[in-house]
Image 1 (cartoon, helix red, strand yellow):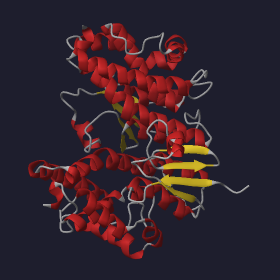
Image 2 (tube, rainbow over the protein chains, first blue to last red):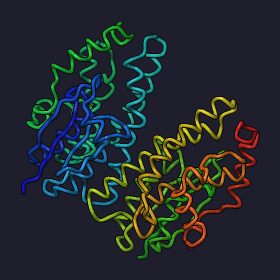
Image 3 (cartoon, rainbow over the protein chains, first blue to last red):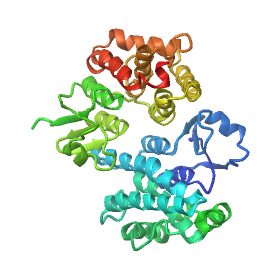
Image 4 (cartoon, each protein chain N blue to C red):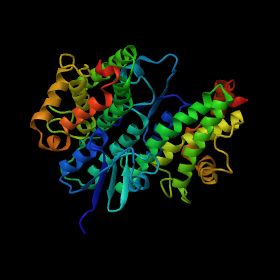
Length: 221
Length: 221
């Protein structure tokens, strides 16, 4: 019997797009279910009762949640086109930085995005830049975090591309090119050249989403 | 050349003890360096410049940080006595629950421990119990989270044993036995029977630590 794979996501969520990208890089066929976070489906609540969040991957009836956990599962289940480095130390470093993105970069960047006060926003943007500087130096002169092709950490780091789109939509310098030339080249490489990226990341829709959602916060001033 | 393994830790920290337990379960020889968090060593700052936190594992000169990341590395590097389940879905579930412990249980339990106000503490204890209830039902009737012997998720879940020790030291019902009979049996099994556990977890020292550190918070009233 063929694998039955279903992804519950929200197209604007980079957490969900992480899973979509990994499945497409592996060439795994799947059914995509768009969720409405203001009216979550009974399936989502059933399959992720602990967090009640997307993404959820349902594989042959087994539900999985948490995007980084799902990426590990995908790489262990469909072993071709590995997205993790082979070397245990490189794997550990990739996991370390993915955790850094979710636990350090994401919360402050989100604060910068939603903050209503200019002072608060300036501070959050300053912290965001600090964290991006750390990632910029981790990228070094490599084409991708994963080396010659994109892998787990690039997938995790797509959040930086979300910030770039928010920057264009709201006119706020989340990831200014002059400060982060390597991250910009990395981003541009995916945007210009990568078919999977183009298929998964709805850039125009995201720009409109940022405008509609955060246009009234300090970010738009 | 034999492996050179050094662990920078703090003996009261369950994050550090996680790594110690994994190394001992694998029978890996290592040198232990006790850190003073009020006066961090130049080595710690050098090896974990991003978070400046313990634990840090130094393996043949390569530094690693973040306890859960280190556990993955240990299991991939020394493959005997695996601490992860073999099945990808079981592995994903173990990772999911370890993340839950660090991101959900730990922050609220910590809040319960440090809160000065009784109302605030009661609320935080209530949330702690909610999360423990979830873990109690995940444990089911198994001997260990990992099945017949302790593994990755048991190592991650040792925080619950820290809560039990804090309960004894401070007289606060963090993990009352009548509410969490399975977690209690699990804990008791490690405390009574497990040589590695006994070697790594300084229960008396921890009790004294909790009294000295949190004796003045609401936890002691």
